[in-house]
Amino acid sequence: MKLIILTATLIASAEIQAKEMALSFDDSPMATTKHFETNERTDKLIQKLKELNAPSVMIFANPCKRNESSTVIDQLKKYRAAGHFIGNHTCSHPRLDDVGFNEYSQNAAQADKLLAPLFAGQKFFRFPYLNESKDEKLRDQMRDWLQANHYRNGLVSIDTDDYLFSFKINEAKKKGHKIDYQKVETLFLEHVIGAVKFYDELAVKTIGYSPKHVLLLHEMDATVLYIDSLIKALRTDGWKMISIEKAYQDKVYLEQPKNIDASNGIIAQISKEKTGAINNYNSLDKMTYELDKLLGLAK
Image (cartoon, rainbow, N blue to C red; front, side):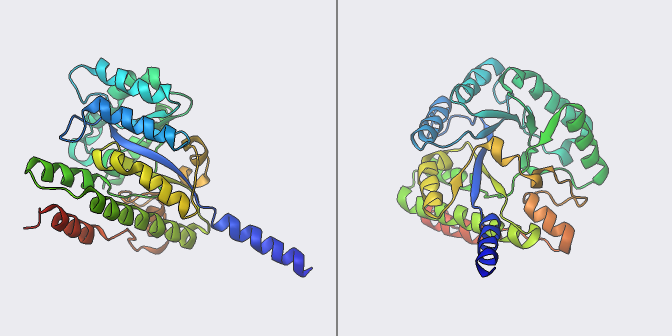
């Protein structure tokens, strides 16, 4: 009897702390910068994911980022050829609260039309800035639009603000500052892995188990530079990388909380629903200060 109880306890503990994660990348394709030509960045990310034997990821794309949308589609085809998935991130990345339902839904529909040849299976839409609106009526209008157009919400469980590292290293590069990329990498890994730990612990506390996490990253310079180090560090920490298809099978991504605080991901939003408290990974100010100091950008 004791052995049976012990075995059941170990199984339950393993389910609670499953430590499985899929990757997603927003805002593709990013423009040419001081660090990467746009196609070079895409090629580098695809190459690194392949070398790391990473399962399929989802690329949330903005096909109206260039005047010639056909060149964007050709670039995104590289991800599909490598076995990854494309999601709708609107055509030109507006914020729902800034433009309203009509303009926003038209923008999303334009992206849907352009990206249609690249979709495979269930379609996913991710709100730019994770902004599902601060107005319940507007939020619900978009929820209805997604359902009517056969989309699921491309929710995330772990938000990282990784984009700030790319903005900062490009600002430093533009100003001619010397960049210690190894020290930036150390700070990048510390920040992102800290977010992983925070939201995983919040998930266990809030929903009772560690879900198949979806990590929000961006197809940006610092993230592409350090993605191999990040995946290796996560694996060393016991995380199993899984496909985005498998991750979105988790029931947590079907949740539709009533509250409007979606900007930190679904785990934080469910926590707000249950407790009324806002729980987000709040090391952003500290990280920004340290990064500015490291890059010679501190005022």
